[in-house]
Image 1 (cartoon, rainbow, N blue to C red):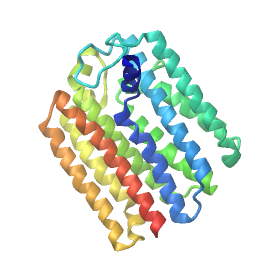
Image 2 (image 1 turned 45 degrees about the vertical axis):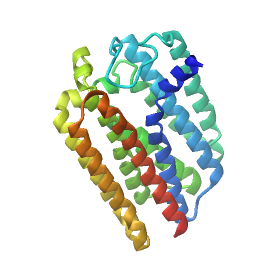
Image 3 (image 1 turned 60 degrees about the vertical axis):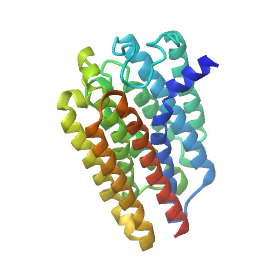
Length: 291
């Protein structure tokens, strides 16, 4: 049973709402336009979660082999670093999860065409490029940009496309909004780990720009995300507009809490930021279904 616990920890369940939120947001836009299709949406959801798990596994394995993780770190426990999971097992699990994601994604060809295979290859390479390769994005300050692309733009636009057969500017703006919210989850993670990352030479955005700057970016990202979707909310009943206002209120509260905490005390804020993102996407989808 302990081994199962270690693998569940390695999946980083607190972060999985990030991949779910993109698909849910895309479904919201499809519901709003009357193009929602349950089957491709469900496949997109499965693909997104598997791809994120693969990326999380890869991050743990490649950070360990690069000597960037330490036992007793401030963040959540790392099974490989602590000796609970062997590096070889983590590497096998990384490619097993990635393979399962790719096989799942192949079925989307029936709705989106063969060009989706190219998109799938791009996503698979992105899942690995975050932590591996000659220029790991997470170690050079590009992690947040990668999140905007791979957890915002790509999942929202692709999931909407396989349902509607096209993707316009409104959905594209919404995809960037989702990406900015997702980037905030990584900002919390890197804000917490700034000292540890600096000590081992990991040049995250927090290390490069400083904790004060990335905390300010956290605030700006949330506000910008709502701003990018304000046009959609204007087209909904007045009662629905409480959703973006509620999100902004929670977002500011989390931003303030981030400035008052350090070390392990920040860990709950990571999960809350991810859950706030998913709640926003889910509330949008519900409101879209009711319009």
